[in-house]
Length: 236
Image (cartoon, rainbow, N blue to C red):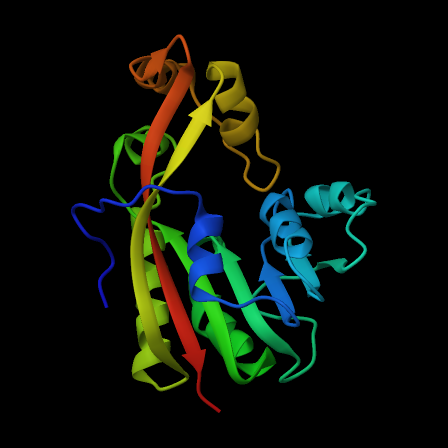
């Protein structure tokens, strides 16, 4: 297993990756850390007979998700990966999109054990994590350096594979495009997220704004952000 690759030639929406490696129709699907449910909607609506449970630990975001009225096959619930409120062997696929590194470090092993518990025999876990590289990562690290927590998340996955909870079926490196209309859009989507209380000093705020401005043009701010996916086959 590798935590990063220096160069990935493929740039695409993440939906292209998970639809390529997984068959989601007629599956019981659990998404851990669904956030604003943007990926949840894509998973739930683009196929047949998909039953989705979407968990979120941020209560403010969860309340907003409960107002979504056009996803009848999605059950929005509160909960985290370290204590998943679903039955043993009840899910065919577990997704985590850029959320494993947000699990408290001392709960990471428990989170992987919980994912193993809820997956059915031959079930799969799809865990995507941002790679600690690139211009967007450099800006984020000015106020929220995630190098340690991303390493810890990778170590936990590797430990779960080494301990034979899972078989590493595939490791995929690719890039996603991250776009913002302007700095205000960046503030709303990144600095003002409800799940993390970013408190920036004036100096840090100005440094972030300047760094963002270096990547801004008439089309807005666009970044190529590297990602890694670990596709795991459960062992029972």
